[in-house]
Length: 324
Image (cartoon, rainbow, N blue to C red; front, top):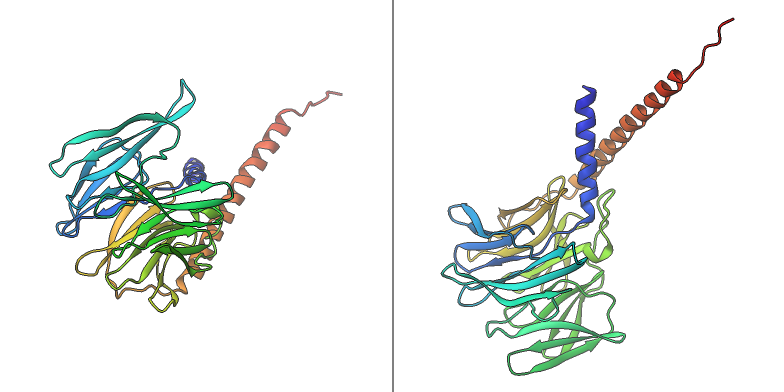
């Protein structure tokens, strides 16, 4: 029994250590039946009609994906070279016939020359730091245009809408840039983090996407919930992920159902279908958090008692008995 408790405790503690890692947001839909998504180890191909999935790209550590209008898939592979103590990456493409090729060779450091936020003409939308501000840029094969310059804290994930508005997160806010003008969509879209979350604020808010009516949806990774901002600017929670899971990104299929990408404590990724009418009771989060805290307190007491018993055992072994 003691061994089982020790193993269970070790596994759960390992999962909490893995909380410090953060998943990618790579989730794209071909508009018909196929969804591609990343789990940072490979890219999966999911048929939303048959529910069958298979590995589309093996050994691909990519945080983002882009699917062009010809159904060619783009991603990155990112790895650490221990002998050189440096990171490297390359950009790849999987064409619609399944042929894989590098389209940008290996380079050191971060990927700063290929954006996965693009329009149907393959023009990219990027953010580049310039002194104490950020340049929001649209770039094609011929030229680049500065859409806006803004003073921001730490912009992270981006999303391009069908009408070419660039949505992006700058914790705890969400902004939109369209036709050169910057608009604050919501000043504070974040949530309280679930108990004992080790995620930084920059990874508290994750993927952004829209529906066919231009409502905005945001995955609140730290709060384990998805929030909606309607066209009138009203902010509301539409669902909450189940215990130990957090939302990462989402996409609506052609029938209006939501396919939600979620990450479990420990790093496991899943994509599940949610009917748009489904909304979980927000009160459940209170009870879940209480249960979560009780589990951790119980584990802490078990560990404390085991350490205490070991110390007492060692102390007894070191006692010297003097003979009269």
